Image 1 (tube, rainbow, N blue to C red):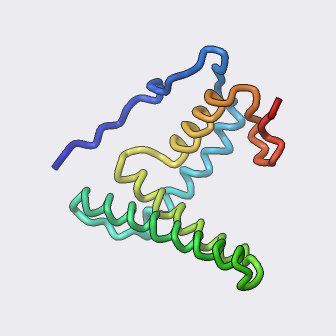
Image 2: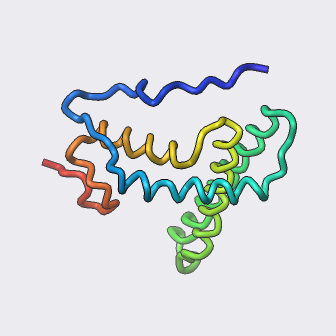
Amino acid sequence: MGKIVIRPKNEIKIKPENKVTLTEVEKLCLAEFNKYQSEAIKTSQHYDDVKLRLANYTLGIAGEGGEVAEIIKKYIRGDGELCVDDLRKELGDILWYMANMCEVLGITLQECAEYNIFKLRNRHGEKFTGRGKRDTYDTK
């Protein structure tokens, strides 16, 4: 079986003009992911084979992502209203699979979230506000 290799966070190629960090408050907020992860892994069936566990969680993420896509497709097609509760359930399932995959890889959801925000801020610099709105990116 191949080794699982975890690259250090500092291997992101950072544009010098976009050098940013996370505040302590932001890190505390993201720490909630670790609480979720510790609860999620309690409900997982742990296979002895790491490859089997990774395959299970990867296929789970893909399957649940497909269910999210199906809900959106039906809404776009006009088959009814968009049910946010159904989406919340499927997105929660994706989060569960992610939490368990992270556990297998020896990383935390918090690390993934921090890394992602760090990457986005370094990619987009001051244009990234983190508000998640259409006006998040300056188009000038």
